[in-house]
Length: 290
Image (cartoon, rainbow, N blue to C red):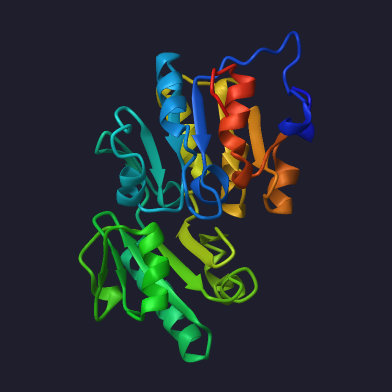
């Protein structure tokens, strides 16, 4: 397939006469990709989901967000949808777990203690210990809670996040400054054995080495008999890199991190310009009034 980094909004179409789209799976990141900067879903998303379902195309949100948060976002239209939650560590369909990749309890506790050390040293950070049932936090000030609520519908403030009774699938650290320049370097010692991923301007996620969005998509492709040529993927940030490699129809948003733009085969309009739906409408000839 030819590479094209011209935005679809300019009229460039990645298809050729001998390369028509036979898409069976659409996977999209949420924040910075499907959602605009105000965290709003596209107005025509329900219509697009209906059209995709009628054509037998599986729509799959893939996010660092908690499963409960994603399920709420798609309430009323989630039947049959696969959710890749917590950056690929927890995959659910119709309320049933398809796969998960929990951290060893001792590792999760070590990461949480590293977050405490950062905070004690003056960094404005907090840890979110992500379990299957809930997210757990020790920091309870309103500015931090406001950020946690955006991504973790089910969350609890506890005295000690290292002592919770749950399967821990990820530890996320929120930095009110730059996560890429402060938190990520401080967690470098975990990178030899685990994934340390900058998933947004203010977030770093730590997971098992085997866990990422791409691994979850490949497992789903294998289970459903869907090929990379039948897969369309959208992303904007560094936690989307492996996911882009699973699809011949890989799109970086116009607002994406430069590394994501380099990795993707095509460039979609920005998240604030309804880039995911505009690309789906054009490539799949969906009759959407955008």
